[in-house]
Length: 184
Image 1 (tube, rainbow, N blue to C red):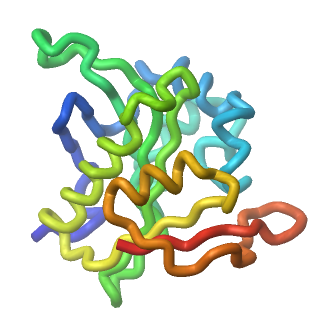
Image 2: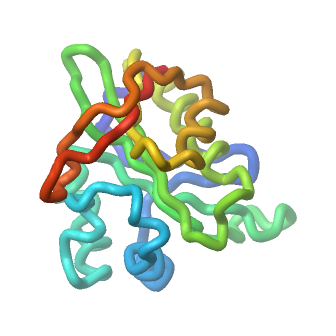
């Protein structure tokens, strides 16, 4: 079993790849962070929105941020015939690590043009398989804004149970955000 944060994972399956984000992904990551539709359901204190320069964010993602969370690019294979052909479509995150109880939280966000294609469901499935089968993680949680029904469906498809509905949580806004809490 690997300890979480002992390496930057590379996870592949179902036509999806989760891997380290590189400078080659800067334009797509910039597009993601500038999308109001993508970020309307997310906290204000996200690492990729912390700095003005996407290039700086990528350069520091796996030193400054890696102590607290693992952020991976989500890629779809552009051509099944080519092993290396892939298209950046979003990010997957493992955060809120609690080593003493073997717990982590997960999240995901996709460029809007990739919504509704099953990519988030597959990416989350890969994260779950990795966490349960290759690390000592025993508890995986997630939080969603109550009105984010698409993300709730992704969690349900991956076996998460809603454990608390409509509770206030600090997401960095002026007032608490009303969220649903999920566990698997």
